[in-house]
Length: 296
Image 1 (tube, rainbow, N blue to C red):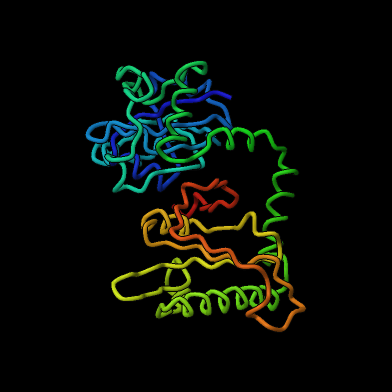
Image 2: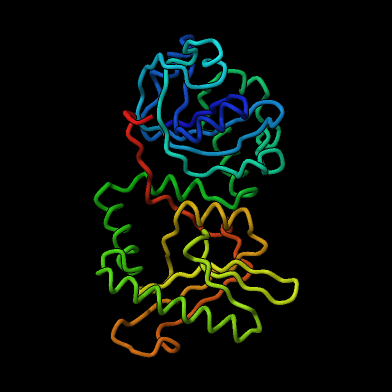
């Protein structure tokens, strides 16, 4: 597995991250040829950001003459024709790019390393330095990602299904609703007892409860599971919102729920995390959104 630095301006990166596509000019075809499925990609945004803003994993390579980025659309022709799709593993929220991006000077890399659209990293120096800085600044473990890449598809599916089953994803719709109902009732009771005014907003917001007490406001993500509660599933919307409002986020988990027990307020064991700094935990990508190219 090889690591690559992909360089481009911030506007192009916004489009690329949304489309999960990057491209290089013909003169970099040699690097494009060496790029392999599963290689790690570091997203470097050029001036004025001048820093690494995200991490991805290469998937499918292809050549395309369809204009995608603004410069191509303005010129009515494709410029970066040697393209590849990627899966985003981690990306900073756009307002944080200037403040939290990883600068090349922080990982002892010369500015010239970001001059090309694609640059192969030196595994014994640059890759190690970037991995350490990612862990320090973003609290994100690249070593965990690398270890997950070594799993066979069968083992990865088995582990994902184990977590999902605990949260009711392989239960009947009635059982799923019951698990959610128990967790929500426990959460409402908990925060009401603490003096908060609790509002259920799960139908219209990327979190479940809004709690107010005076000038204090908390956004509560509620999870229920019949499992041990060591792992829970989160949607991309839940993760993005929790990152944006980390100072006001709380996580309320009810684990070890029994579907045979009748009394909600004593069912399961609760765990409350306030404030919930989601990037201090180990986030592992499990689910992906696929859009058919025919409908682009």
